Length: 272
Ligand SMILES: [Zn+2]
Image (cartoon, rainbow, N blue to C red; front, side, top):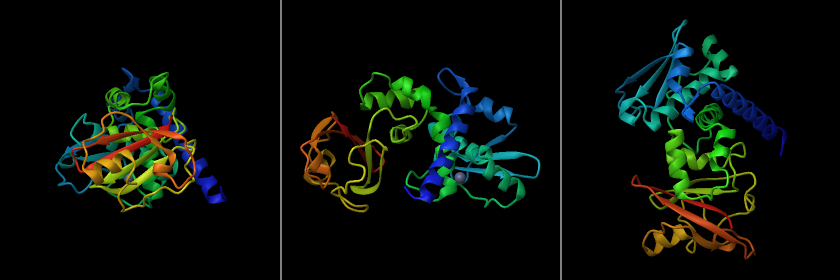
């Protein structure tokens, strides 16, 4: 790992520590009470119709902070999406460098949009904060303790922490909360859109048999569904490492597909 990566990782770890610390004071019925947190910080929430131009927007008017939420993007009160959007804006509010830049007027005013493959560092930091705040590391791990990785578990966690299934899947790629070595592939209309592996996933540095913008490997479970138009695999499938990766290994991997109704599908793989 080079210096820039190490610096980035250490910054991200500080952000996770901060979010885990703040979350500790606002856990209510095993999820984070965002309303109380926002109230205590005297931040005003506004839900309004902004015609899908953003999810959330943090504004400072020289004395008060406001978070605007776009109902048209699904950010109505208490929706899972709005909780993530609020937590993201709270990231900009709590991360010291962001906060100071907002007060100084040097922080670019930006409407935030949920985008799991974002490359923008500031947005990435706010997402790391949000995901940790909503699913604090220790509580998340405790909720997964002795449970097999499954869609049922994802459903339970998504309900318990009041976050989307996609955010729940992503939380597993973070060693701070992940209790399984996993790799996640996200397909939009049949083509790979992004992927993410946990630090402890055994093939994380091995090239895999697809690329961004390409279909999945033909012998993967998700590939069989797309390419052969076979029925959806709802249960965990056993595949081999070389179904997915350019590797000479007979290691077995579990593959669980998640088919959404919104044009995207997810495939999660993890060692047997
Ligand atoms: Zn943002």
